[in-house]
Length: 321
Ligand SMILES: [Zn+2]
View 1 (cartoon, rainbow, N blue to C red):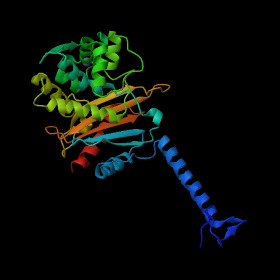
View 2 (view 1 turned 135 degrees about the vertical axis):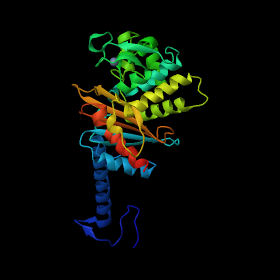
View 3 (view 1 turned 45 degrees about the vertical axis):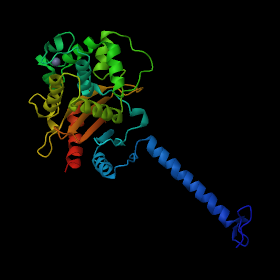
View 4 (view 1 turned 90 degrees about the vertical axis):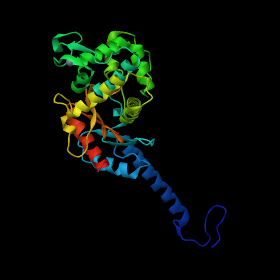
């Protein structure tokens, strides 16, 4: 058969006078358009898992996230320089960025240590709900280890206040946090809010997992110029979050793999109306020589220790099996 310049095949079948091959190509174009449209729709409502260059990690993340009933995002970083593996379930693009809450406190502690506004072994007294600044519980005398394990706000506020809002924001931006649209007033309240992962601090899990890769690299670095005792206190604090009697993530404990990390609970989705809880857990394992970092973010739950820690535990157990 000869093909004409118009793409018609001489002698080919016609339907209502239109060459068959032209009809099929039009139908195929329409079908591919529909498939593309469906894919875009699925992406826009968060039903499609992101693709990754590491199929093993991706399949584990996909398997775990399929068991999640609430809107959940998981980011996993294998500490070998590869890109993070990310998957979301029932998370719309407008819900991707939420307050990470106290999950940022180990980074705040690092900023305080690197700016020399905190001494090794230093402690303060948390007076709980009656004190100023207020904490959600009366933790009494807290050092850095206990502050991270219990997620003491009074200790974090103290560090943020010593740093000041400008140093807090710039410090977090250096860890890959988004730059703010407008400058934050350099006030104590602004330092407290941003420094503890609240408005206007909004993140998606891929950003936090990358920030923790930088943090862990800095904490374990033998060439670090930051006080070695303070670095050890930050690492101890994150171990105690899971293993300590007062830790906020006992649900990350298991007898297969030792996990350290930090819980976080925010109340806010960037640009979102109303108050929605975002529950976070950042976990890494094995604790003495981390190979993976997992960040889990769950919307509409209760808190990071309850909602996110068990999911991160499941991912880490499967990764290190
Ligand atoms: Zn406290």
